[in-house]
Length: 166
Image 1 (cartoon, one colour):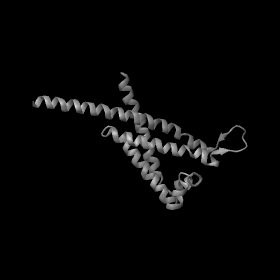
Image 2 (cartoon, one colour):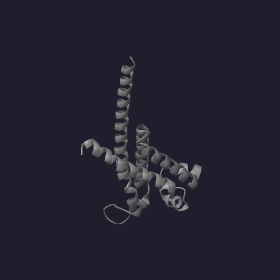
Image 3 (spheres, helix red, strand yellow):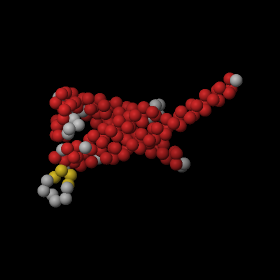
Image 4 (cartoon, one colour):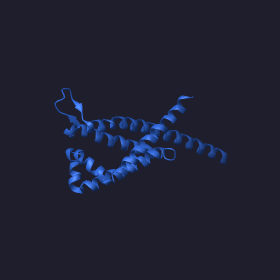
């Protein structure tokens, strides 16, 4: 199988996984238990604590949910709109950087008194966002490559039509 074919299959699996994760997690933000679970993270972070004060926990969770659903939808649009998919992937990467910052801002992410720094269950849940960050960067690159290839083929088709008409 040529490398380009493998790249395409790789994006399909990774892109679908990333889109599914964002769509699913975004939908969960409309559940009360998810709003309650996020309280510790949201209130400890300088990135989100002010928004939490202004909007309240439920509205903030819904705003994050809508953002995640939008990003997941954009990522999934790669076959039809690779540039939009790249935007979604870059947005996902930005969101993952934000959630990874919770490792620093949330004391509950670490176990105290364990010698070498050790993650708590909450910290372990946050750490997975490093993998999602990598997936978002890779899917953004693949989407941009597909957009450039599509633009080149559209340009070639236009030039061919132009010659046929002259």
